Length: 265
Image 1 (cartoon, rainbow, N blue to C red):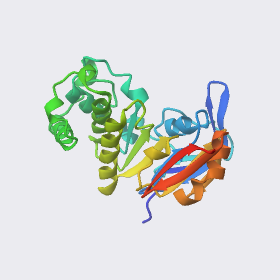
Image 2: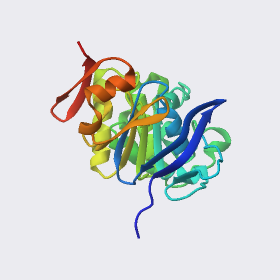
Image 3: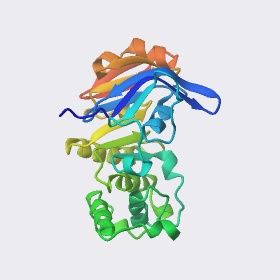
Image 4: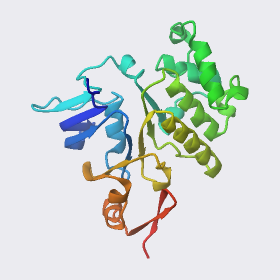
């Protein structure tokens, strides 16, 4: 039996407030693909991802199709066991005094921390699984440290751990290196590449070419809420297409298996 698509959208309209960000939008992403969603600020990248993780819902228009893993409807808590999510926005929602172990444990509850009533949902075995993930990410020595005492890169890795506790099939990363210095960015991307090599599917949202790991075989380039290009990195990451998307002259170059961009002089 063939696997259901991770995401199937046809003629979907997604709004933020009164603003139509994506209108009559169609996109299909298969399970197992490594995909980067690329485009300038305001292109619709984050809106698309919020729909994928069910923080936003498309307008119920006639003829609209919006399915995740083959289903029109989901219990959002069940979906979050299938799709892990990491973003700088999520990182900023955590209080400084939350301990790293509790950040990772909160992935079982899709909550911010595990205090109060939420903490009662932690089951036997969850703590052992959280500790396993923490060790895998080389955060063992920091498990009892407060979140606010970590570097920004360590905080981001703790959120990767939060996303991984359910052993999801897909990891969605919204601007995974936003706010990180070079060293932290390299470390986070190395961990992400290891996860991809281990079989985890990646959907990465970014507007920085150097955040696209070599494992990504498909680029979806957005502009003004529409797909400007969709194909392999070699097909999409061209001077002409990126200059069009970003509204400024851009030169793309490769260094080994990575892509970079500079102003076109």
